[in-house]
Amino acid sequence: MANDKVIHLNDPATFDEETKDGYALVDFWAGWCAPCLALAPTIDSLADKFNGQIKICKVDVDSNQDSAAKFGVRGIPFIALLKDGKLIDSVTGNDPARVQALAEMAVN
Image (tube, rainbow, N blue to C red; front, side, top):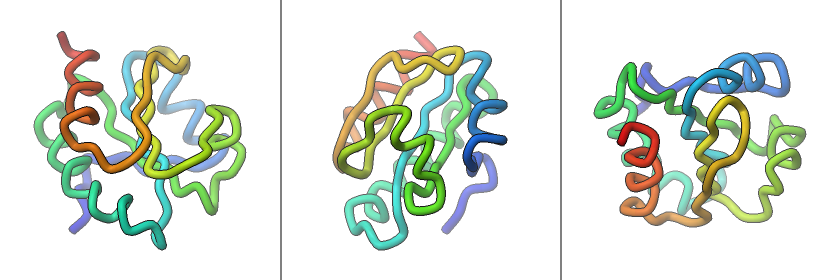
């Protein structure tokens, strides 16, 4: 179930534009990745909870390898907290509590 508040980014056009100002939580994922799919409801929930406070984004690593390489993504899901396009912190793996903590860092 997709959430229309989640911003789907593409290399480099929308990625750079959407993440250059303010906070963005970016989920690097792939459709074949079971842990990524299991984390998707958490990402959707965060998009609802923090709507207007932080951008919640998704990047398909199969289609957007440049962005994944830029942030050194070696395993997915990889969730990055960016501020003004720069990496602040990240979580690798399906860990909903840590992902939520990343989002809360941006609004607290």
